[in-house]
Length: 117
Image (cartoon, rainbow, N blue to C red; front, side, top):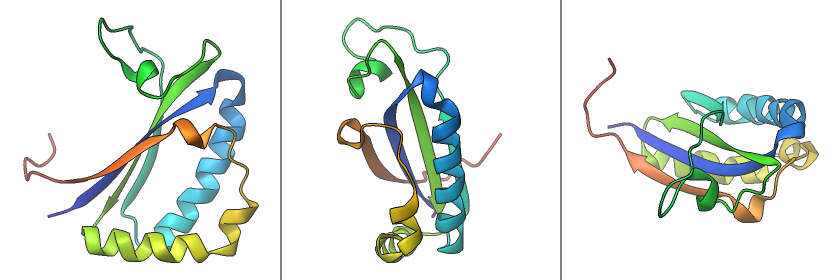
């Protein structure tokens, strides 16, 4: 069963290109360490909910949108091993993160085997 890591993060709208540059640099590193897929999605249609929504999940400000990042791995064990290696990779320290990482939320999920459409 594959393993997916998903992150939600607030990114200033005027920092889209800077975010894209950092995401591309990180994608190279994560793929070198075994990620199958590494894709980010820029929020363009984020309706306000009555109780919660994407923006409230990360305390997004008026000038921010929410980015969803997803990485798939062969297994949780492979992801854990890769993440430990990525933390030690000196290239990570060179990447500017144009967002407030304190408001990022993330988690790991096991695929339920439904496949793709």
